[in-house]
Structure formats: structure tokens, C-alpha cells
Amino acid sequence: MTDLSSPAAPPAPWRALLARVGVLPLVLVALCLLVAVIEPRFTRTSNLINVLRNASFLSIISAGQMLVMITGGFDISVGAIVALTSVSGALSMGALAGLGLSPAAVVGLGCLIGLIPALLVGLVNGICVAGFRISPFMVTIGTMSIATGLATYATGGTPIYDLPGLFTDLLGRQRLFDLPLVVYAAALIIALLWWIQTQTRAGRWFYAVGGNEAAALQSGIPARRYVGAAYVLSALLAGVVGLALTARVGSGEATLGGTLMLESISVAVIGGVSLKGGVGRIGSVVIAALFLSVLSNGMNLIRLDSKFHVIVIGVVVILAVVIEQRRERSPS
Image (tube, rainbow, N blue to C red; front, top):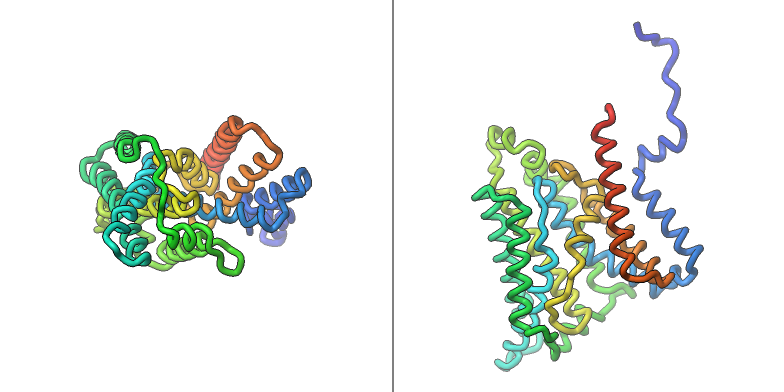
């Protein structure tokens, strides 16, 4: 019989703090303090802006990866989509510039045309996974190979230069209140996804499909449509990153975004997105993107050999997966 006269002891202060804000924000703060102590250059304004810019690129592409993982899959093709969009956008702007159009029209139409290959790859991924029930791993590794091959063939291995000045200056170098425009673009995308996840029926249905697709179908949810939509959105967000990175580096390159596939999955896992589907929040993904950006920046500042960067990220991902497995197995 329960003794109602003796209330349960309150949780320890540190446990209450963890329950309120979570582990990841505290780890991020600790990492920032550690890097700042080891390398004071970390706290310079220019460096912090650089960290924020890189985190913005990573947040956008990881947001798409999150949507796919929530539905129970994952997208290996996102890095190749970044490269293909970079090349197709640069080629489109070059062709449009020869037609005598205004710079604004060249940039606007070039960006839209550049996103078409990303849309097509996303549609192929979605149709194959949702419609034909093919393994997401096999489908996206296939489209990754195709996208990489097309980008390399179109460029011949040579970067595409002579991009419109409006494109590189506005999207690549322009700042508003001393922050790059990509930071505002990322904030807008993040806010939109947060609203969809928390305030709309469509957001709840993404989780329902990933949690139990059979039950979702019985409830009348068009599960296949939502799975397909996740891959299309993931591809389009990767395409947006491809255009933004192209403006940043000033050229269309078939090798752009080579590490973003690994990093986007890493951010999603570190941010608590379940590998089994049905769990994941955009806020935690953004914090994970900041964490990974600070970690990479810190390794660069202390001049750690770049070959070790991927090793460190791999270790962090394994730890995140272990923590997730322990959390799932622990009694509620």
C-alpha cells in the first residue's frame, strides 16, 4: 500500500535541470567554454559568425534528413544533390546570361532551374521507397551515384566560374545586421518546420507514419504520400544548400558537399532523431548542428589534421546512438 503521508523526495537539482533543458544544450555550452579556453580566437566575432554560417548550412540539410528519418528511412543522396544543384544552377545562369536577360532574372530563373534536378532526384527516391517499397539505402545510394556521375560529367571535373555578380555578392557575401543571409534563410526554414511539426495535422501525421505505418494506414492517413513527400522535401532542402554554397565559393563544383551526407545524418542522430522513425524535433536538430559546427571549428583552430575530423565525428555519432539505445531500453 502506498504511503501518502510521505511525499517522494524531490529530484536532485542537476536532474531537474536535465529534465528541463535536456543534455545536448548543456553539452554545447560546455564545448563552447572548453574551446574558448583552449583557443581564445574562438570568441572573435568573425569566427563566431563563421560558426553560425556553417551551422546554418548544416541545419537546412539536416532538417530534410530529419523528415526522412522520422518516416523511418534515411537519405544518402543529399550530398550528391548538393553537388548536382551547384552544377545545374551554375550552368543555367551561364546559359541565361547569354540571352541578354537582366541580372535579377538570370539569378532567379537560374536558381529555379538549378533546383529541378534536386526535385527529380527527390521524386525518384520517394516513388521508389514509398511506391515500390524498395529499401531506402539501396534507392538513395543509387540516386547518389547517378547524381554524382551527372555532376562530374557536366563539368568534366572543372569548376564552373563566371557566375553573375548579383548571385555571389547577394547570396554569398551580403550581410544584414552583420549576419550572412543564409542565417536568415535557415531561421525561416527552421521556423516553418517547427510550425508544421507542432501546429499542423500534417506534422503529426509524419510522426504517425514513422511510428507505426500499418496503424497510420488503418487510421486513414495516406502514409505513402507522406513518405514520398519527406524525400522530396529532403532533396529540395539539399538543393537550397547547394545553391547557397555555390554562391559562397563563387563556382559550381561537382565535389561540393562531399561530407554533408555523413554530417546531416550525424546531426540528426545527435539531435535525438530515432533511427527507427517516429521521433525527432527540429529544435534539437538545430542545437546538434551548432554542436557539430563548434566541434569542427575548434578542431580547425587547434590545427588538428583534417583526416581526424571524420574520425571524431564518427565517435560522437556512435556515442549518440549508444545513448539513444540505452534510453529506449530503460524503463519509463
